[in-house]
Structures are given as structure tokens and as C-alpha cells.
Image (cartoon, rainbow, N blue to C red; front, side, top):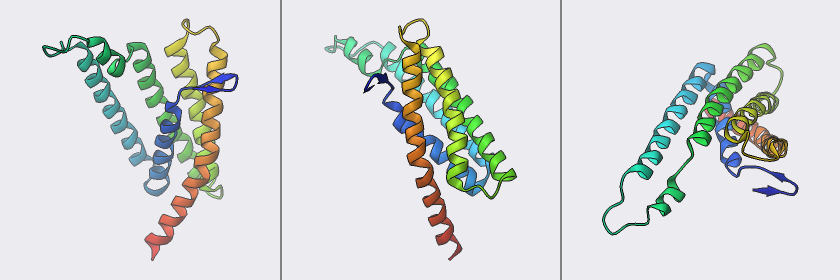
Length: 177
């Protein structure tokens, strides 16, 4: 998607939600369960990717000769898909690790600060890995794409971290009653 002079993938909006959910699990139930969520998410993404690849390579039914339409809708390039999987597992596990360290060693920092810092760092790593693997050598202005992706992610972090803190507070208030 175009963001003025920058560019970013529209998927970052949904992807940010996964970081907020993992931070919620980490805050409420601990790092071990959060890592489990990440591993299960990775497995689910891998299975979905395998299904999309299978949809594209299986021959079409008779009468459906325009296989190009399926390829356009369900096709993913192995390079982009692989980049997404690698970036997901590395960045999400890093996010869990950073969040947990902050939670244990700086308990006075609020949920929003923990989530914002951990996610901002992990999203930077995610952006470098994903854009580097998926688009290096194929995009003329790689820094523009890197900066655009990360800028959008930072805006989403700034929105989601305080919302996460509100959800955690609400949940704790209603669980204690």
C-alpha cells in the first residue's frame, strides 16, 4: 500500500495483532505459554502455505481451464512465503523473550511500555528479515520499502500497546472479582 512517498504491505495491520495477542498471553500466563502460541502459529502458517501451494499445483477440474486465476488468488512465491515464515518465528520468539525479560526485571514498567518496546524491537528484526529475504535484488528502492514497513509497524505499536494495557487491566479487574 502507498503511504505518501513510502510503501508497506497491508498485511502489517493484521500481523501487529498477532504481536499484541502474544504479549497478552505472556503478561497473563507467562513466556512458556506465549512461546507455545508462537510455535502453534508457525505450524498453522506452514500448513496454510502448504494448502495454498497444493491448490495451485493440483490440476483444475474439467471445464475450468483458466488455472491462472487460481494461481493469482492462491499463489504465493516461495521466496515471499519463506521470508514470512522465517521472519514470523524469529521476531515472535524475540518479542516473547524481550517482553519476559522486561516483565521480570522491570516490573514497575507498565504493560503498554513492555509491549511497545518488545514489539518495536521485534518488528524491526521482522522487517529486516522479511524485506531482506523477500525483496532483496528485486525491488529498486529497498530502503524505502524497509522504512515504510517499519514506520507503519511503529504506528500500529503505538496504537496497540495502550489498548493491550486496557485489556489486561480489564481482565485482571474482572478475574479478581
